[in-house]
Image 1 (spheres, rainbow, N blue to C red):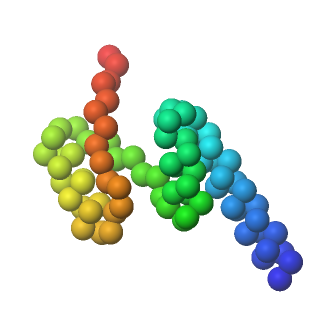
Image 2: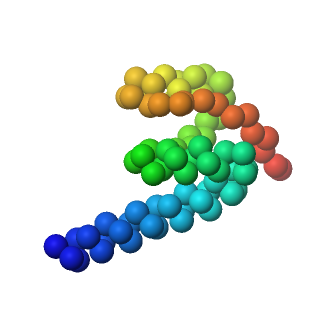
Image 3: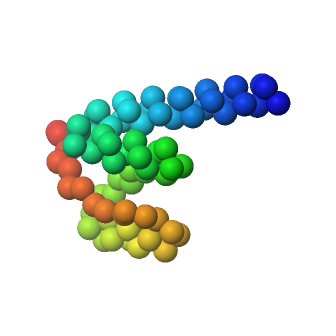
Length: 79
């Protein structure tokens, strides 16, 4: 039982650390929100699409499968 509890504590701490690092990459204004989602067991997922049709389909799929706070961020690609 102690081993299981230690494993859960390490996993939780690791998740919090990863969440904090990802939040720093995304931006400080999103850090608190992302951390709260991860602490509640949320999943942060990025989907790369090649065009607006694929983007729309990805949003529909995520929403259809209980996705919460699904939204699109426009990104530029470098050549």
